[in-house]
Length: 158
Image (cartoon, rainbow, N blue to C red; front, side, top):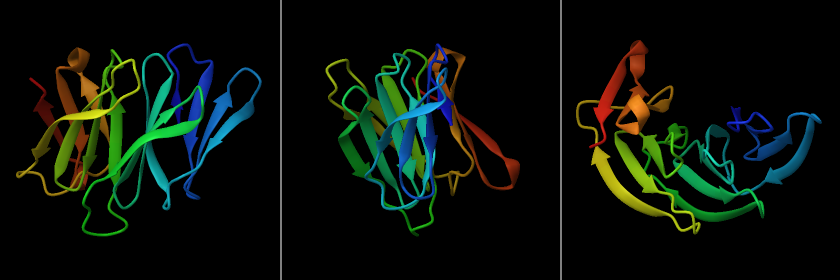
């Protein structure tokens, strides 16, 4: 579950491959985003709450326009198994999104016009598997990612 900065909206991930958008004050679902073929395990809501990014088992990542409830872009990270976990995190300014799956991390540009482009891809050679989450730190200058056995790795983003 992720909440908008003003806590008016929320999004929840589901094992049926859908994402529900919620009006928090009315406690009602306002949209169901369909398109994943596996359980959705990670969500990131951009700061302006106009775009949502979802990641599912197997490496599928989708970018959603919440105004129209449509998928505007998607990609699949190469994953060694269907159950490989991918995670996403939105930057504090809402202008970029990180995705991490297996041993790679991608940084995505999120311009206001709705186009999506990959800014950088890094192979995480010292870290065999992204497990348990991904987040921005220190105003977006670093990223932290969970790994096996409770380890956390911090990466500089430039």
